[in-house]
Length: 132
Image (cartoon, rainbow, N blue to C red; front, side):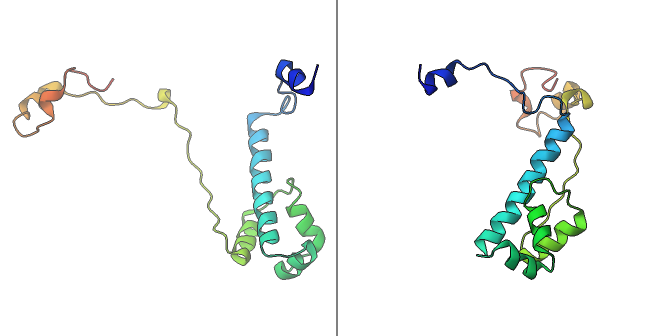
């Protein structure tokens, strides 16, 4: 049996993330994205870690930590890095919405019917409760 057949018949598993909370997995992924972006900028600038460290005003060891995918950045550190490598830092804190968190209003068909002469879309409503 070849490798392709073994892979095709392999049992699916999530052992890599087993034991981690959803928040821990998200943290790991976001730190990896940040680190990879910093490393990509350094490489695109054609710099070694040592040269990049001198440019950034930190030690080579600190650059290595930034690129380790495990360094827990502060907003200040990220802002400093972004300023020097011409990146825009955008932090977004938004509530996750699920259908149970909100209710869509229902059409008041009586009002719609009274306005039907003014509003050309009113005759096309086939259901009194168009939005459920």
